[in-house]
Length: 483
Image (tube, rainbow, N blue to C red; front, side):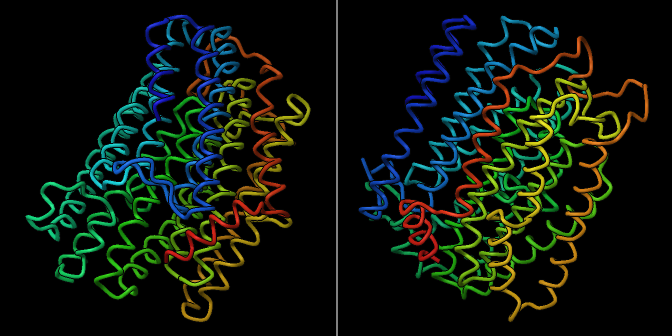
């Protein structure tokens, strides 16, 4: 976390594009290497606890690696993406230092939320992501992006207020004897059995609504398509690829506390309900979507619903859900980078205005198609196995839920296939100008360096589909065992 804070301060004070680019990328590399070291320590010892204020277990260790990896990819992508934006006249060069300042704060806030041992401090970290990303979403200072930023800020702030109230309810188990001690997840867990079960149920409902807003569960999802659709591509990749996962970790931590007081069927039932609703609504909207960035945003809502189902089903579904989280973070980030390249090329986020992408930007088109196949769960990608594992875990107990989910999977696949084929092979349908985050100015061919981050993440996802390193297997097994 400190690495990102230092990088943010240097970027702000330097006010020089070259310096901010180098500092941001170097800070991201250092953070990623440190996350691998921490993950190795967690795999060996079970918990990495450098002080009473910071504690990383297997669950947060997995997401920490993803945050720093996608953070590194976004930092690198941002360097060349903003250079192209400057050429187009979309961004003034003097604004780039503020962009990297906020980007570093954003990633640092996620790392902080995952690392702290105190629930309130975790809430502060997640709330800090709201403040930093609100300015990144409105970075282009257009009416549509400002509207998306305000919607993001208001909806998430109200939602996280519910999360804060729920968190405070869990603190009621603490007695006067804890006044001089550091309150941690373990401190609350030690006294949680004294909590009234009804209060525990109320607290979890507040938490699920509050942090579930950040996760993107329906019906608290309304901010997500606008924010992801209007933000710069590398910011959208972070929002969709890892921020939703960080908030999901918060929900899972409170689920563990609640299950110590109330039967697991309560929290599992709520996760299944929100998961099913999120999958159903997303499938219907994706099928009829007209904007490819919003299409990817709704896909994120669907995939978070899939993870919620896996945890709600329990058993092997938990392991599958956590592995699905890994695949989704990598693939969805890659897709948003590819979408950014398409936006640079065509100047529009409308599906009907993107045509013959395979001829114009072949590398980006291939990456986008592969990413779409991966995110929809087509073999041999690992998402097929994780979806199959989640379905298998629930089909015996919840056959009707699984049936609806399978129908939704089909709708999502057909919708993606329809829209993607139009973009890759279709002909131009209209000459009209269409409002989009970057539809004004010179349309350029994206820098060749912009293809590296999406390709790298897709390659990693593809390798992990066939081979899971012992480190990742250890972390996933330990994290799943917590439930």
